[in-house]
Structures are given as C-alpha cells and as structure tokens.
Image (cartoon, rainbow, N blue to C red):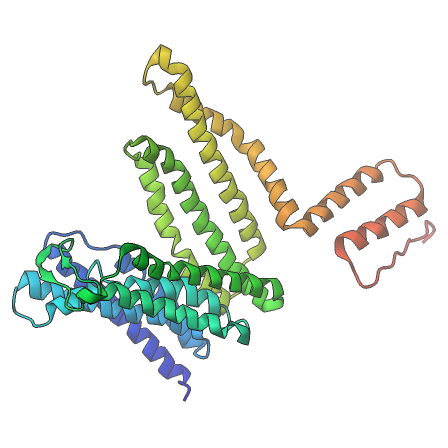
Length: 406
C-alpha cells in the first residue's frame, strides 16, 4: 500500500523533527557531564532533512526514504545515548537496562555501520530513481544487506567493558565470550563494508555510462559533489602527511581546512536533493569542470608547497637554522605557479574529460587562424561547413551566400 503525498510528507518530517530533538537532548546531556558533544550527531541531520523534502514531493522514490532512515537510526542512537547517560551518570541507578542502551547508542556502538551503509552504499546503488540499475544487481543488494548486518552483530557480541566511555565497571550485555573473534577475523568481517561501498560506486559509474537525458543530469550532480568533497579531503591528506611522518604538531591552517572538509560533506545530500527535485537550476557541466580543475590544482599545489618547504629547509638550514624563510619562499613559489598550473590543468581536464569540447575549441581556433589569410570564397565556404560538421555534428547543413547586388 503506497502512502499518499500528504501522509508521506507528515511521516518524513516527523522523523526529521524527532531526530533533531533526540540529537539536542542526547548531546545536551553529554555536555552536562563535562564531556564534549559529538558534532557528527548534528551534521548527519542534513540527510533526513533532505530525505523529508524528497519524500514529501517524490514519495515513490526510495532515495528519500533511505535518507529519512538515516534520521530514524539517529533517533534510536541518540535516544539510547541520552537514556544511558541519564541512568549511569546524571542519576545513577535510576533506570534499568542502561548497559543495553550504552552498548547500542554509546560512542563505541556499532550503530555507525548503518550510517556508513545507508549513505555510502545504498544511496549510490539506488540513485537517482530509487531502483537498482538492473535485476543483475539484486545479489549485490543482498550482499550490501549482509555487509550491514554481519559486521554489526560481530562487533555487538564482542565482550568488553565500557572503559573509553568512562564506565569501566560496566560490561557489554551482548558480549559472548565464546563469540570473541581474533582481530584478523574481525577485521575481515568489517572489510565487507568497504567492499560493498566500492561495488556500489561501480554500479553508479556503470549507470552513468549508460545514462542519457534527465538521468545523466541527475548523476552529474552527485559526481560534482563527490569531486568537491574528495578535493578537500585529498588536500588535507597530502598536506598533513609530512607532519605525521616527522611527528610534528599539525598546523592550525590544516585543522581549519579539515573543518572546511567536514562542511563539504553537506554537498552530497544537497546535490542529491537538487538532482531529484530541481535538476535544471544550474549548468552542472560548469560545476563539474571547476570541481575537477580546482580540486586537481589544489592537490598539485599542496604537494609542490610541501616539497618546496622541505627543499628550502635543507638549503637555508646551514645559514639561518629553523628560519621562516622556507615557508615564505614556498608560499611565493606556489603563488607564482598558480596561473600557469591552472592553465595546464584546465587543458588536461578538457582534453581528458571534455574531449568533444576541447576538439571543438581547437577546431574553431584553427579556422580563425585560416580565416585571416583565406581569400578564395569557395575554399572558405568548404572550410566553414567542415568546421560546423566537426564542432556541432548537425543532421543537415546548408550555406547560402547573398549576392553583392542584393
């Protein structure tokens, strides 16, 4: 039985509101005990918000309900966390089953698996129409379900105390001593999750290659958002690697870019919402092009910056010791490289990913160069028709020339 649009909207927005209330209540209780609240609990609310918007307007599309389900998982996790904190720390012994609530909703709870699989696997597998790419992907959908349930159960039944949560005397009530798995076996079980995600990425790529029209536009939105997120996380990874290797403290600017990278996570649900509801708002090809260009450029300049610092420190250390000259020189060198590097990266992206546009631009440039020297009208007409064929590939083309006497 299908829900009406009005009922679907009410259910979806109710789940979102309950998720907000649960997050505020749980993290407020955590903060009252002196611990730092989890900002991730509020960040994931953008998924049920977008899901409620999609489900209220496209109730037949499973994408909206997958995102709403993320809100339902959040309600359960945050509600159990609030229950555990209240019964164990705010008013100890006042509530029964607090160990159960802590095992399912605490910081070490395997509930994170549902967040990863719903957002990183099922959304990709079902996007954009809420259906599998084909019937052949049904076995993989079942594997994704297994990759959600099996690691969750495997982690849940491990015997341990809640030491990291600050309750060393409380044991996991679901822990089974006989089910305690060796670390390699447990890691192999958890490894099902990235395998499932990679398979869903493959499904998305194959769907994109066979898509056309509206579906292709929708898929481009998700690709663009993923490129932006990947660019920021790639920058952070490359920039922080030398400091991790040398064992030095990560600079404040890297921490700032890491915070920005977390914020870019919002682009994924936002892109999904735009793609499904208002796909024609913007020129998505321009956004993808800019994301690819500046993402590649950012990573390239970050590598150049780190290498320049390392090289200049080796050169100036005998004369100036631990001087800031290496940092200043590296910054100036990267600034000087920005424009020529951007031109070369843009040309590479156009040639590799926008070949037809690149060839069309090159053909027009060559025609413009010949146009200045060509005096034969028939030759010029033939060249013009050839350019039209190469750049626009029309079904028919004709050329009319007006007589000088007309």
